[in-house]
Length: 333
Image 1 (cartoon, helix red, strand yellow):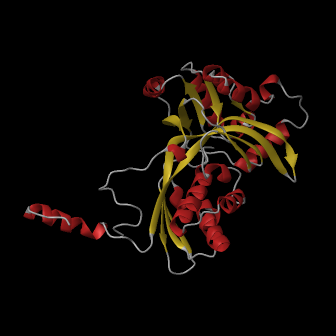
Image 2 (tube, rainbow, N blue to C red):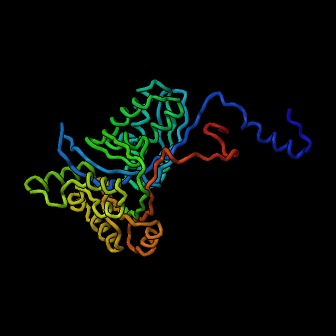
Image 3 (cartoon, helix red, strand yellow):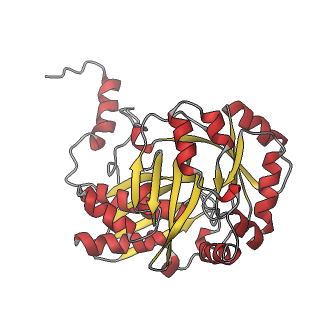
């Protein structure tokens, strides 16, 4: 039995009492949806009208915040905030598609979804795929769905990076992005990313790639990089690995958007370990040995593009706050 001898202590305990009871059910879930970088991207062929990839990817400490709340009906509503995302039509919004697909697949009620964007749109950093994966993770948390296989299958149907971004971290992705091989015990890496305001259409980029390579013999720069970069990283040589990073879509992307080349050349001026474009553009990234060097380069960059200092992260290893005064999901709603 708890004895209370101090009236002020009793008052404080009574103030906290509403938040200490057991909730009958969670009504709100929140997750962070992390951006990704493609350190390499090789085109290995085509199948059924789609390009086949081999890419070394990693999530970084830039993320969108996803908040989902239960609805009593089966409708899904999405509200976007930031990075111009308010203008994305619902039919083109991957967060909307993910929510509706989840409700259909698992026969749950609907959800009110809010996305607070920090990942730049159209930059090749996986923003829309991250939002879709984040919505699936948040809804699985909200409705207590533990079938990871079904979630992965659903994610793969929504986009090439979505299945990978359910967990993120270091991985090699192949095929159309559905073949994900997680890679453990990788060294941390630090990047400075420059994101032009204008993006690159993924479909247009692949079409331009096909046109540019229709009648040409691949050069050494076009040769597959993923295997070589991965071997160097696993052998403990991140500096040499960074020097070999590259993206087969770079030539096509810089033709479609001259700002891609401008961002790439701006980063080269800081003599980083390596520079590469992520995804189908438009963001380019430079790898540095330390975060301090990234900060140094950012402080000296005087161009027009948005600059981000980033570090590789493994989301599943990021622990939630253990502060007893932080409300748990669904508490205090």
